Length: 112
Image (cartoon, rainbow, N blue to C red; front, side, top):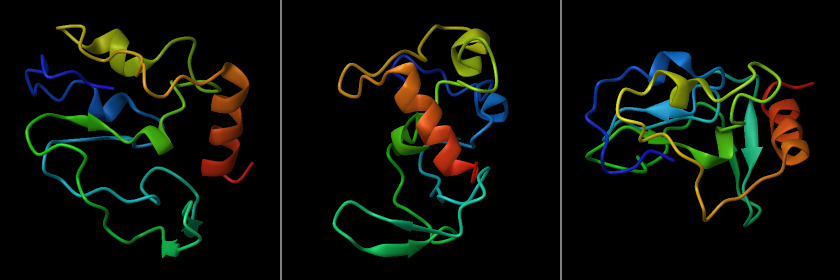
């Protein structure tokens, strides 16, 4: 997650291999940075991967939890945290995930 200490510098956004980071107020898509064509949501609704989704934050850069793999399978450490000048890219205490879960998410996102 990105905390409200974010200075909106944008250093994190291009580092994400899953395109899970977006500027505040910008709509996101499942398909950006992934191989997904459509996604079945928890409620059973199927959405096109190109359908724009509501921004998670209107003020600060944000991370779409469902697309974040903490760079597992790509890099040794989360690249957003590595480049953040104010250390506001941190683990989300409300969404703890194991390395295996993150690798499963990577496989889902990239059709592996």
